[in-house]
Image (tube, rainbow, N blue to C red; front, side, top):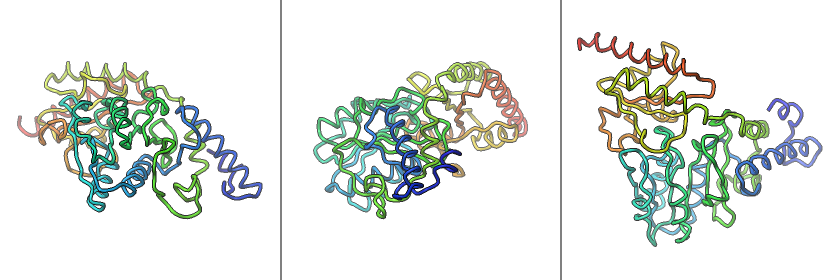
Length: 355
């Protein structure tokens, strides 16, 4: 990123030598990302992140579609759920939300049963950003293709944590974000399958093959390409599993959500009965631990996790939940220290409450 910012600081759309230098960096990064994802370079549209990539796909698809039905899993990221709701209301589409099973995994047959001749778009994330549960996207995409239904797969949480092959999945739109693999924040990409209809997202200079105008973030894109394959999140599963084993041994009444189905290796979402998740979060923060109580993109909100609610968890239990995402730098000792601190905080809060 430093090299791109200092030695390729021109506008990649300019014809002079400085612009051509920036264009080479941008094209090389695009080609590297395309090879990693197994997709043609021309199918990639660079964005400011996963949120914009999702917005682009949803607007670009629904604005060109006749009035119909949009089928979406109820556990999608807010950048999908809120955007879908917004455009369905304004464009007159019917919104169909499909709830997952209690373990957080969508039943593919239940989801596909909602698809019909009126369906103009379907959305299902690859890996849930709160529970970490892997979703049956391949099956859903295959069913949608048979009926020519455009489908968006939010793969932001899947990149770097499971095998991602864009060509094999063959979804119309797949979104990614660089910071989820240790790359820079504020850079993402939307993979658009060749032949998929996508209305222009931003007008202007016609960059990104006319799909998203605006000067590309060359250093950010270079950083995205450089981060691919560097961090190996599969190694965090031992730490995550050790954490869950210890927390259940220390607090048997804790519930680990999605533990009986396939999840990404670094994520653990659990409920601590009788405790307020926000209070636990703040106490852990004071102790030096950074955890979450829902989607990081919805931080600051007191609403319980919509993911847990969709899984059938009641509001009280949902408000008593935390999400821990382990990084490659974390060790078994870190996980044990987190459990010990949780036990201490819970004991302290119960004592203060006279319980």
